Image 1 (cartoon, one colour):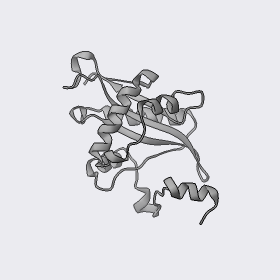
Image 2: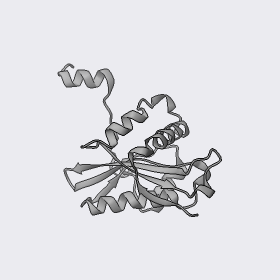
Image 3: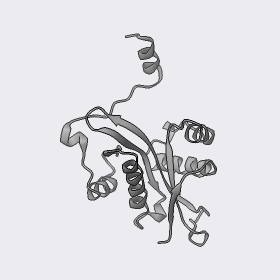
Image 4: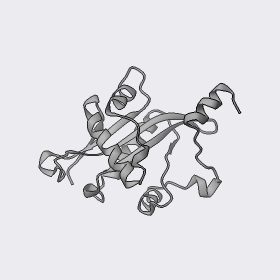
Length: 171
């Protein structure tokens, strides 16, 4: 299939927002999405961006049934491992259902890996839902391994009132 992978631009935020909602629907958590197109524009394309993005795009003659040429994306950011040093975290990897199985997801993941290596990163980290067997299998085929099952680490989160209380030192 003919497609290109390129850096996301401010003008892509409308399509990224659309695909974030599609991904959330697929993951059965659409009620969790709180960010807007404007948030993406501010957080990804300001002087000090919180994330970076790449886009998978097909030519006009291969557009989706809904008329989209931007058919996949990945959001990523740089982080640091106290044991291994520089790392890249892939927040999202998404390809629209009708374009899956055509190498687009692998190309997006490969590009994030290339960008990470170019920045001196020694690892690529990301999460995947335990019920998403097709994605788990895909990642394992790429040489990735399951940190939770192999090392026992769990991904933890603090948000909302708990985050506010923690910041205030409340117990």
